[in-house]
Length: 288
Image 1 (cartoon, one colour):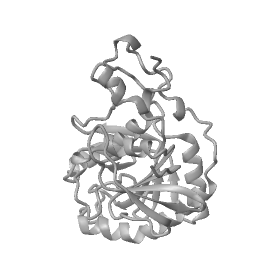
Image 2 (tube, helix red, strand yellow):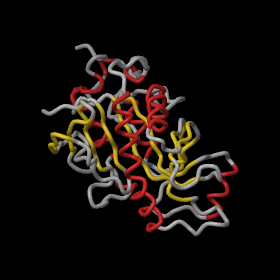
Image 3 (spheres, one colour):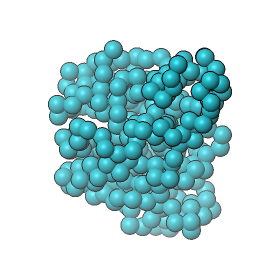
């Protein structure tokens, strides 16, 4: 099977990477079903990338309907070690205006009942998630934004809401009172599953609007979001190119050993079917 080193997730408005060379598509099945779309593999700056349109090409899948487990597991099957996730977000701060990028380092969960773990079915694991974003990737993306001359802000909290409706004004004001910075509908589950899969993960949040709290701006609409994302797609590709060029070869962060102390279940008690299903994730920690 074709392999890649870096995974790229494209959010609303970012459905392809025009700068990829030697492109091929790979369709995968996983123990959790099919990912959002085929993975588009190619070369950028001499490195192998795998691109996935989060909502499918043509934007066919609601945030609540996303098969997060299949999407992340597919990257793992392709040999990816790092995921760069581009996402549309609303800003909850005056100084994070539309067209800016934000590199959050925290998440706050406001979703309801979404599955965000590979584990269960007789196997219990509890990953450390105090710092959900890979610090190495934060450094790389901050430098890449600067090199691409894109206005970016490092740090802050991404509120992950259920959707698909945008926030009410009451909700938006409450999130601001809590000190939240940006709001979106998808990245928390990706980050949790990437950590369980021992993949480095970073969110590149592209601000499209001021949510609905700002008194001097119109209520957020799909047209507004897509319009700003189209404008930002060129910046996204510039940042990606700079990030790939600056990406270190070796990983020295803790992401690659996230499961080392996370599996609690007695190895002899793990059901054979669960062991087989999760072999790609747990194989190096489970002795026969």
